[in-house]
Amino acid sequence: MDSLQKLKRFLSQLKENPVFFWFSLILLNILLFLPQTLFSPAQVSWIPLPPLDAPRGWYDTLLFFLRRENQDFFRLIAEYYLILVLLFVSLKLNWSAWIYRFITGSYIFLLTFQIYHNLMILLFGEPPILYNDLMLLKGAFYLIIDISLTKKLFEMMLVVLILGIVFSVIPFLFHGIRDGFRRFMHSRKFMIIGISIGFIIIINNLWFNFSDYRTTIHWISPKIVSTVEKSFKLRSFLHSITDSPADSTYYHYRNIRLEQRPDIYIFLVESYGRILLDHPQSREVYTHWMKSVEDTLSGERWNAYSTFSEAPIFGGRSWLTMGSFITGIHIKDEAVYSFLINRTRNYPHMVHFFNIQGYHTFALQPLNRVRPGFSMNSYEKFYQYQTLINFEDLDFDGPAFGFRNIPDQYSLNYANEKFLQKAGKPCFLFFLTVSSHSPWLDLPPYAENWRDIQAINRAQLQEKYQHTSEKLQETFKLNISTGTGINEYLEHMIYEIKMIRDFILNEINPNSIIVILGDHQPPIITEENPSFATPLHVISQDQEFLFSLQEYGFSTGLLLNPEQPSTMRHEGIYSLLVRLLSQHYTSEKSLPRYLQSGISISNIK
Image 1 (cartoon, rainbow, N blue to C red):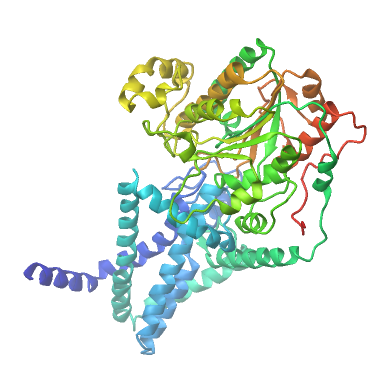
Image 2 (cartoon, rainbow, N blue to C red):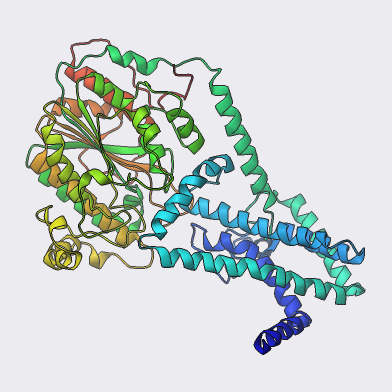
């Protein structure tokens, strides 16, 4: 009890300290901008310095103090100033205590929004839309619970603890500010300083745009308004869809009959982005590796054509890319995706096309597994794969690696042996890989025999295949510096490409067509204003089929030129694949159109 009383006395005395008043005043301002500094995709200088060699002299120096690209927290948050004015006026007029609670709640709301807004930009490369994210909230909650109950419990608890401490301290800091205001209530100098800051904010807003993120007087409310406006627009768009005319383009595909049916393998590689060529630390190693893979495949008569394709999203939410690719519709919003898969059962997407062509369609998705709050019903009914191979179907009780336990090398080869080889007819396989999922901290050893991954424990597996991993890494270890995550990311990408290469050489029939595509650029390690482009490779032994890709901007080989622009969009690949299959494997002279941007979501009946 004595210790508790001493603590209360100390905190009471602390609030009366003038130094604590100024400390609280500054800290709460910094705290509001801190998420933007911490989560900025660009490099941030924590202590910004004015330019010494400014080309326009004093003008550039003055501009530095008014607006700068560097996202440091040496800024004034305009809404925070308004909160302080409201607090000061409420004390002056002896308003009731609920005003104080409103002020504290408003600040906590602004801080929460700043964390949410800037974290979403870091992860997904664009400002969030609240309507989308509310739909994701339930799934995100259950995913966090799922992760927490496995191996991330400590990290999750630590994050919750830090946020809890921060939010619980905020009312105490406002108490200190309130007590300080009471001391300065009749200070003319204090009033003049406060009014002067208000005039500076007004002048700044006349000079710069409210929503300019570079200004040293920063507004949060335009971002809130934008998020709400986009949410209402998206909601209105979804309501308008039911009144729009049906687009029957893909329905015509049911009239196509392939006279030859090559096996089709689709590898949607997690986080496989053009950063591998854009980033100077990975470019040389990646190009060397891809050239070696190309040479190995061509030695066995497998040839490739490649280009860049624009993904609908960045950093995460792979199911939106998968939906765009399979349906031929640009889907970048969770609300649109949910609307589509829950409202129709016979949409003429890519899987439907191969079903009616007599293929056995497989989806290999080790990430999908039974967990609380997650249902596969809508997914299964919409996509209509004949065989779904999920986590539980892989019979894996070996050592766990990476984001979701099962190494892709095991998943692919197990699915091939247990399912694909028993199909008895042409196969269509869609495989969304998992091992290259961020945060790239736990690369599985690449086994000479994939069964070893299950047969022995983790330590034995790592020891047995240590030489394999070292051989895989020796080419690039000396070329990569640490600190950005690009090293670990590159290792995981090479793991995925090596797995696909070996599968092509050892398991795939010569009549097959293989498509390798990134689902999106990787989160966090990609620079500011990122491209949404990912590599797209088509591999086959059918030279005529491959040669026809040149018309659509593809170049020969697996290796892409970093200067090459994107010539494809993920939603356009469906129509291109059907067109090329019709061109080379039917006798039809009238070919379906290639739709680079797919079709708009419409009233499909």
